Image (tube, rainbow, N blue to C red; front, side, top):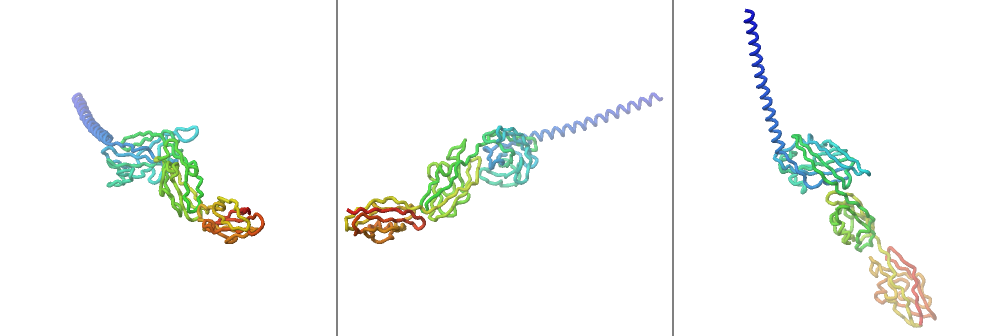
Length: 379
């Protein structure tokens, strides 16, 4: 009887173990099936996810660069704070150092190896904002990432950027850091009022190791308070090279304009170009001898005596005789204008016994030149 009971117990244990093992196998198969389904979904989600770079990165400053990507897949992308951004590059030290940095996400402007989403667009180049579902990168939309990289990437050095999304997709892009423009000359302009001053390469020049002059674009941020800058809002280094940049102002004083320079990838500035508008000094052009017959009268013409001024007409030039002739008389007297000479109204009458002369200075109201000596020979 005891053997029978033992046999029943053994059979029960075997049956119970078999049933338990079957349930475990079924549960294991269910778990495995769920895992396979999740894997298939994840693989499908990955296959539907694709980011493609747009153009080259633009460096807005020494440390900050923007990278643009287009969602070329069919999956909506979000949870940007869970994205990973890793950069590998050589810095601008001498000699250069290699860096690998994982940048931290920031919801605001990035600083010190951080990155943020600058914006989501239908067209990033034209700054056309997304049309629906804000803050979600839908298929066909473009996202601009702003990266603060410290120490900065060296000009002409290679940078590789890896962007990873939460579903396991990674995209690596590699670019050569653009060599930014360099402002090599910024001396300012001094010009006579009322005259056009040319701003040429001796006064303002930017160079770039990997861009032509026509690609270096100046943008005027703050125009001169008075006067006319031409072209007005922007121009290229090629315009400066060709002598096409001018400034005109009829009022003396200190002026200037603030500007930046871009080669399409990097922007430098802002800088201030100073302009000083001055009243030009009169210039003695001719001071020839007058020949007059003893006791005679002769007209002093502009071929004999002439002063010019870049920003004043002859009528505004005042001649003042500081030492009168001793062998004759001047008409109209000790004070006359350039217009008197131009009109043939200045004359000398000889009444003495020998050669003569007079000393004079000339003023345009602000600047004076002289004294000079005008000689008269009696024949």
